[in-house]
Figure 1: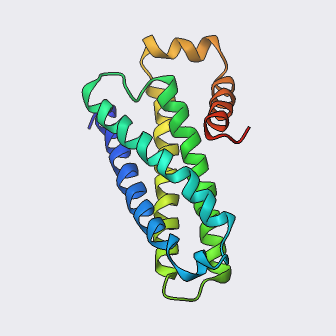
Figure 2 (figure 1 turned 90 degrees about the vertical axis):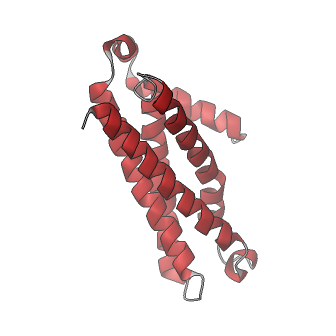
Length: 166
């Protein structure tokens, strides 16, 4: 299997897991424990970021089928790294809050949503790290001219500005 096929497969699996996590998260929004305010930031932070990452993953997956280097460029690499880290952090927060507080019929939705988000985050990180090594030379010059941390921090700042946090 070539790297490009493996890259696309990781995107497909990440997208499917994010869709399942998003479905379970939407089911959670109407539960009495979320509507009653027992869960605050753990559910709402996940609700805030997961749809964004899911939409970008699906768009990247569709464009990846059409182009040779799409998904291997610095922007896609940084997206995979940032979304992987954020998915892991947010899924762990959701799982820890569920573990500490939830003992009702909605516990399965917390568990499935958090677990799928955690696995999707790990797949995003794997994809981002592999893309760092297999990036085509015509795209990789950007990483040599500028530090990768500059891209990461500028994209995080851009994400915050777009979401209205800053």
